[in-house]
Amino acid sequence: MTSDDTKSISKFLSLILRHAPETINLTLDENGWAIVSELLEKFNIQNKGISFDELRHIVENNDKKRFAFNEDLTKIRASQGHSITIDLNIEAVEPPSVLFHGTVAKFIDAIKEEGLQKMSRQHVHLSKDLETAIKVASRRGKPIVLTIDAKKMAADGFLFFLSENNVWLTDEVPARYIQF
Image (cartoon, rainbow, N blue to C red; front, top):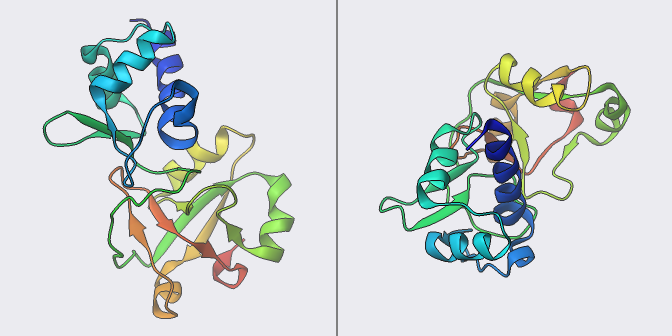
């Protein structure tokens, strides 16, 4: 499988497991898990032609760890970033003092006015380090990294969650907690 194949399949997996399982008539449970055998069967119906070993390679080598298997490798789900309603079944945890969010210039005015909003996703995504925030923002243009006072947010009652792939999640970040 070429790197282009891997990238293409990974993008299609993101679509299916995060946003539109109905695209291949796949059923996700309330926690976002799909049965691996059903996913592979429906991928093959769509002429994607993927084997279990190829799927496992994609899950294990995805640079952002977007996908996860359950312990016995019979189920798969996206680690976060869903626009469909699912329960990731993760508990609130104490965040580090500071978290980061990568964005681009065209969104700064709206963020200054409204803060960070989850928009069509279930959560706002935050990074524990500058490098990750820069990488995320670079996909859309010249990156701007915002610093979030997570310690103050938590003290004020905002909840934080840590996804399986170490992305920090929260429902919103009001502008007063953002250093521009």
